[in-house]
Structure formats: C-alpha cells, structure tokens
Amino acid sequence: MRATILVTRLPHAEGLPLPGYATAGAAGMDLLAAVSAPVVLPPGGRALIPTGLRVALPEGHELQVRPRSGLALKHGITLPNSPGTVDEDYRGELQVILMNAGAEPFTVERGMRIAQAVLAPVTRAVWEEAPELPDTYRGAGGFGSTGTG
Image 1 (cartoon, helix red, strand yellow):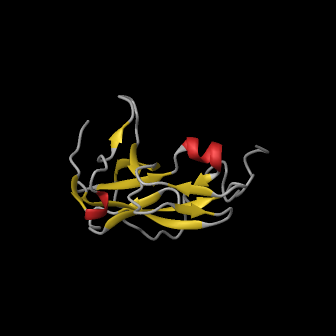
Image 2 (cartoon, rainbow, N blue to C red; image 1 turned 90 degrees about the vertical axis):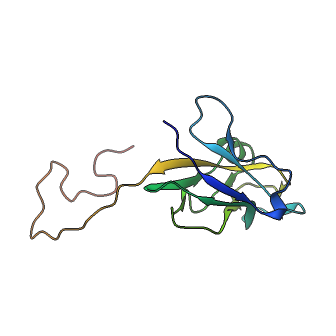
C-alpha cells in the first residue's frame, strides 16, 4: 500500500535527500539532521534536532517518529518521547528530540540519520460511559499480574 506525503524543504535542508526507505521491506523512513553545525549531546543530554522538512500527511494518518536501533545500541541515542506523533494537521517543521542515554558524548552531524518515521493509520475513538465493564480473566490485575517476565 502507498500513500503520498506532501513535503516542503526549508532552506537549511538544501542538499539533503528526502526521507526514504533503506530497503524494500523497511517500515520506517530515515529522517536526517538538518543542522548547520555539529550538535554535541553530553551523556544525559538532549536536544531538538531539525529535519528542515514540513509535511502534509494524508487524511486519517499520523507519522510516528521512532529511535534508530543502531544509534540506540551503539551510542545510547534514543527519543525520550518515543514514539513521537506528528498529527495530520501539523504544518510546522519536523524536529526530533534526541537524548543521549550513553556514557560518552555524541555528535550529531549534518545529514546524519537520526530517527525513523512510520506512516500509520489513525482510528478515532468515541468514549462511552458505562456503569460496569464486562468481566475478564485478568480483571483489575495490573503491573506484573500475568507473570514474572
């Protein structure tokens, strides 16, 4: 299935490729850093990294912004609000909150693949009050109630 995302490139993204899939079976498109100078994230630090892109998503969709597994494993770089959600009616610049959960400083360079974006359908919910809820085997059992793992 394919959907079209309209995109406008901001001046600080000139020369950078648009997001794309690394392989034919990839679910996420790589988002690139459109920084004008390197950004150093100290251990425990975080920064808002611009992509230089503005988008119009298809109706009924969101763009989920997720960490890249390689950055997370090798450097401890993650997204503290993962997955981040870009709503279909947002028209500002896509920016990514990066956090360094690693032990060493990490430098974000221009054009670096910093996150991945997944286009996903949105189901709109309607809340309905009920005097009681249907019973289940689990019931009100919470954290850890279904086992030790």
